[in-house]
Length: 476
Ligand code: UDP
Ligand code: UDP
Image (tube, rainbow, N blue to C red; front, side, top):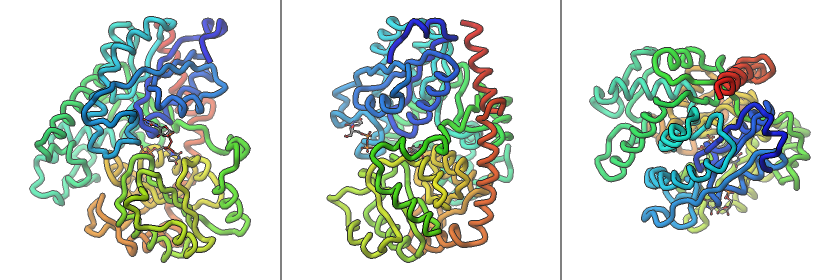
């Protein structure tokens, strides 16, 4: 890795600065691959603890990775934690995100040592990189990791203070610009609603204002989506809001290009899925991303729901969701009970690969935007179980807008409520064996084909990326 003399003849130099969480980093690393393929020179900034993950993704490429020290002595943040995935509680997100301002000095000092930067793609959470871009005189694009539907709906709701008009948390509010969309306050986190009046709420509002203002003053937004997926919302954003959203996704290599051999030492779940395919069995994939924290009680209900549903399943539990101190589920005994029908995995998996596996015919997902995109691109219908952030709005998009999924049944009918085993079992059966599940599967497969075309040469995302490069490099 490094700046070779050949690269000096390339078309430009792009700096990427992903936020320290897997969901924000993975798509930008794929973007790095796309820029490299189009002969741009790429530098990625991160912190020491996140570096090995990034190095692995960019191994055998000419990208340069620079790690900047993460601010120490932030009272709320435990030492050594440099990623929101590793925070003991998501409540620490705001102190963590606000602390990144202390990286600005080292970031700018590092920029002075690099070849001239043509443009930068900064995570939207680093509001302060707008200043750096202005000082060094290069355009800043932001990446938020939202789709245009979530971006447009949340932005319209916020600008028009629609939540203020609701008398109760359950009152249906019409998003008047898109009147078929009805939401309640419960679709949004407390910080967004301004429901709290404590220190966390004031940090949250300070942070959101700074990052939204910086995004508005930026050159554009990179969106992990393709135009055909959400044309109305992309057009709305680009004509009535801005800065311009460049849809260059799906931002991942489609897994069919990555044969099993790339997985190195074959993980156990590869053989297990292959065996299920040979048997002619359909598999349900169950995973809730890298951040979600599930209670021990909720994990128990999931186990029971999966056991009673009688479907084949591959369930990924992150260490954050399952701590042996608090766990009441004995995974070994559970696997024993469900015999060969179910497998529980605790390590990091290649999710795109799993979703692309022919045996996988359904996905119980928290609807993180990357997971939604990956499932759609694999043609796999989703059982939507949102938990926080943009996930409830993404779930609405999945179920009501593009109709590639069903919604899990929560106890109280609210978008993020507790799910009892019966609510899961019923909807799992519907997804895997029911007519509604089959309909969603057909829609997902149609969209998968459109996504494939979008990133193929001449497709909408392919052309948008080329236009972005042409526009930025001709002004350098
Ligand atoms: N790690 C850490 N702080 C961070 C990020 C990672 O200490 O901010 C450590 C983490 O504890 C683990 C290793 O780096 O030992 C790799 O973490 P990664 O997120 O890649 O894997 P995961 O734990 O999600 O499987
Ligand atoms: N992911 C993965 N293996 C895992 C867990 C997660 O590859 O074991 C990837 C997943 O494919 C997706 C990202 O991590 O690309 C998670 O992003 P998402 O937006 O779905 O959820 P978040 O983690 O941000 O809540």
